[in-house]
Every structure is written in C-alpha cells, then in structure tokens.
Image (cartoon, rainbow over all chains, first blue to last red; front, side, top):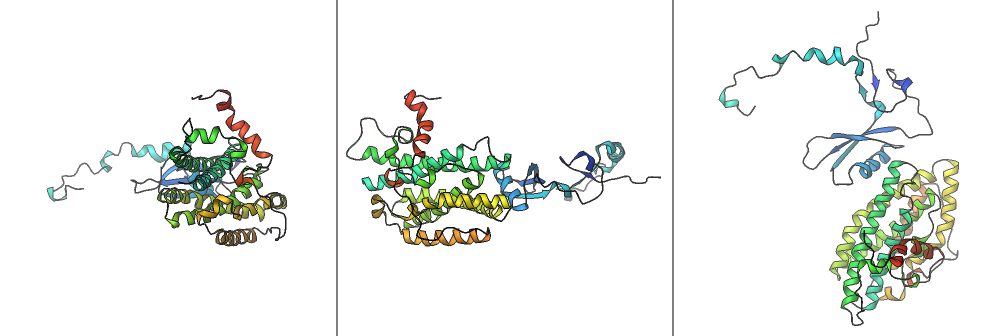
Length: 122
Length: 254
C-alpha cells in the first residue's frame, strides 16, 4: 500500500514530468536559465513577501534581475532569492485531505477564552 | 557660467543621452526578459542624468550674454542641435553590435563615468554639478557592477561568448583613449584626467583578468574628436532617428 501522504511537488514552471517527483536532482536544461523565486521586504514591512519569479543563471544574477524587475518602483529595501526547485509545495489535488479538516475546528482559534484585563494586549 | 563650462556640461549630457539612445535600441529585443528590463533601466538612468545636465546648461545658456532669441530648454538642446554641436565621446555612439559589445561599451563608459563623477562630486566648487554627480553615482555604481559581472560571465563563459567578447574589445578599444584626452573646454575644469585614467585602467584590467580576457597594449591608434564635435558616421543616424519628430513637426508634443 502506498502510504505517502505528502509528496514533494515542484513549484513554478518545472517541466511536467518532474511534477510529483521527490528527487532533489532536477536535470538542468543547459539552454535555459533556472527559475528563481523572489522575496521582497518593503520599507514598512517586517517580513519578506513573495513578489514573483524570474530566470537567472546564478544567485548573483537573480538578485540583480530581481532588483531590476521587482524594485523599479521603490518596492523594496531587501531582496531574497531562492531557486524554485528548492521550494517544496503541497499537491493541489491533496488540498482536501490537507486543509479541509481544519475548517470545522473553530475551537482552535483562541477566541473562546476569557482573558484577564492585564493581558489585553494579546 | 562661461562657455567652457557650458560646453563641458553639454558634453557630459550628450554622452549620457547618446548612450541611452543606443541602449534603447535593445528595448523589446533583449536576450531575455530580465536583461531587457535591466538594459532599459540603465537607459532611463542615463536619460535622467542627461535631463538634469541639459536643464542646468539651458539655465546658463539663457543667462549668458549672447542670449538666443528662442530660449534653450532641455528639449531644444537634445532635439535641435546638429551633429557638429554634439560633444559626446565617440564610445557612446558606437553601434550595439551583439550583447557582448553592448556590455563592453557600458562597462568601459560607466567605469570612466564613475571616476569622473567622483571628482565632480568631491570638487565641490559647483554645488549643482556635484549634486547631479552624487545622485548619478548611485546609478553608475550599479551600472559598473552589472556590466562587470556580464563581462566576467561572457569572457569566462563558452568558447563562443569569449570569441565575441574578444571581438568587442577589438572594436571598442580604439575609442577608449578619447575619454582621457581633455578637450580644450575641459582644460579649465580642474579635472585630473591622469588619475581617472589610472583608476579606470586598474578596474578594467582586474575585471578583464577575471574574465580571462586581454586588451590591446599601448600604441594602437586612438580615435578622438567626439568631444569637440567631430564624430564617427554613427552619430548622424542616431540623431536622424532621435530628432526626426521635432524636425518634421516642430514643437510637437504627445
């Protein structure tokens, strides 16, 4: 019996045949540059948010491309990039079993407790 | 501001504008989307520099004794001067060639601009010019970084990319000498071209070495004349395209 509940899925435009494969070794096509995911932290923001993706030959170029593509309109003060193949994603087809069980568990929200006044900042 | 100073400011503006016009030819034709955006970003930086400098020059042309009937504006300086009046360096007007040659042109130019603008910023006798230089330097620093990395990537890349870079150096090197040969109007500007040349050569050599490339040694013929209005045949075509609308429909706006 196949007991794999969560398999690795590649994120982004990784070739179809790679979808669902759990190998870390994505065969690199030498004629195109790998895909990178870009995370930008804005001036006001505390965290880096996913801004989009782009192609680049290496991390250095990915950061420069991200600077040119995603921060032209003063969107950011800090950039992270990570090669898309290193991002593991859930399989959309498994969304039901993964996420729907949480829908009727409203008691998991901490809204059923009477908080003492002293901790009203919580 | 005397005429020499105006000419000097115009020559800085012209070099930025003409190189921008050249780089702009890549718009929509870049090797990949991300680099298409990168080169057009650089183009817009250069146009921004040119605008500041033209506005500054126009103010002073209008204040000077031989005030023209039609006051000079940034637009009139860009779109209504003839080839012989343009004072850009010859390097800026050279054709794009392939991506490698475009990169090299940017690398040679931006590195020169970097050390020149450092002096303009630090001289401090002209606060407007040093403010323009300071603002531009942030952009130029990035242009140098971006182009250096491409030179290394292509020079130390495949056999073909290396061959193309070697051809690019051969084409462009004869236009690098002019950068350090002061034009008559530059003599009074208290710019130390010797220092710029030394620092430029250091930077160029270190990047080319990392890129496993070499450049011709001294003694090869260097073209000059751009800064005083004697251009290569390239500039006429650039101006024809760039100025066409204003020449055909004077005062046209959209």
